[in-house]
Image 1 (cartoon, rainbow, N blue to C red):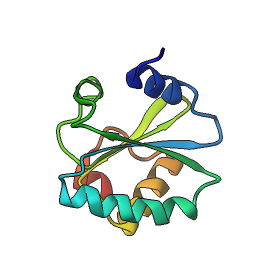
Image 2: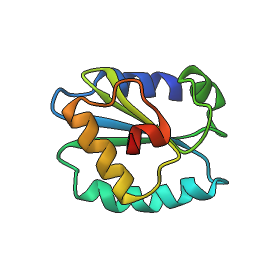
Image 3: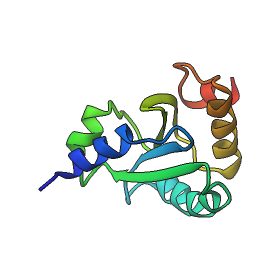
Image 4: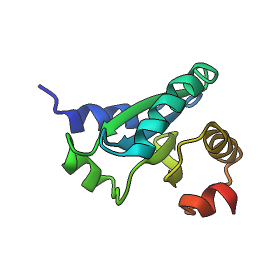
Length: 120
């Protein structure tokens, strides 16, 4: 039987060429994570043809968080063609999600992180 880690890695590897996969690392005890969860549910509806979303609770799956080098939450990693095309830490607003998505669609994220990725 596949482990949660195996299922997650399979999902990342099977990212279609058309869709972006938003891998969201969070926890139920984190205030910004709870805000992101509410925002994300609404935001995903307007982008459902372009993106998929997987949420990983780092308290339930600490080894997955470690393997993906997660140092804080909320963290969003965006995958396309089986590669990380963007990462942002600490985001939880619709505006920040829109900006992140525009940047990854244009291929402009590079290795920048956090606020610099969103406002730099």
